[in-house]
Image (tube, rainbow, N blue to C red; front, side, top):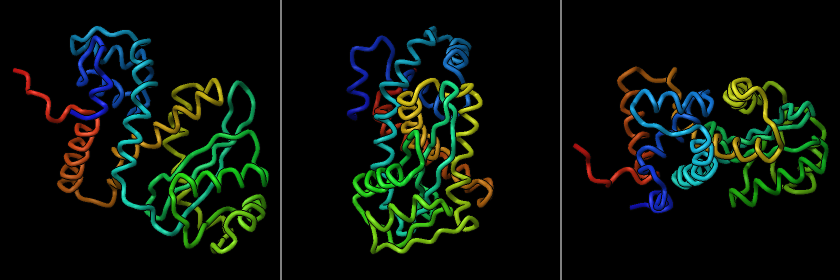
Length: 239
């Protein structure tokens, strides 16, 4: 039994129910009440508040477990920042992905100046424990100033057209932002997006690049990994 399933001890519902609710919420643009309704259709009565607590408690645990299974980041990183509105105030979501599109980190900040870029660079290096060969950004001058201070030996390519990979990685976040009718707090946005960026990409292989049979085989593997990290795999089968 994995650590994730052990942490479910003491809960009224079994790990299969908890992990399924967490999967539904982070995989699809659903509200907690909509997940509640889907579970009710299956004969499981659980309140949206309980689902909210499960997602808050287990979402990051599952995301961290999935990240530990990812390969080492590739040596070319794409960085980008987009604005998000939180309680009517403009904030900035910083994101870094490698050349394969794996999310390295996200950070919500209220500025996009040199200090904000420097903070994001240092957080990236600490989290990944590796130094890239090259970083690709847009032409925001804050990147260049922070780059010269934090990682001067790394090649920096500021070019709008080269950074489509990072910009495209924001699309699932935009979908969820619309579904949630914007985020309500900086901390809440950071917590949600940190778990979301670990769980959602796991179930989003590049479907347009593979035929249907390969896509189904790939998803079968990914669901098996999900069962392993949530602790569902290895549980006795029910009749």
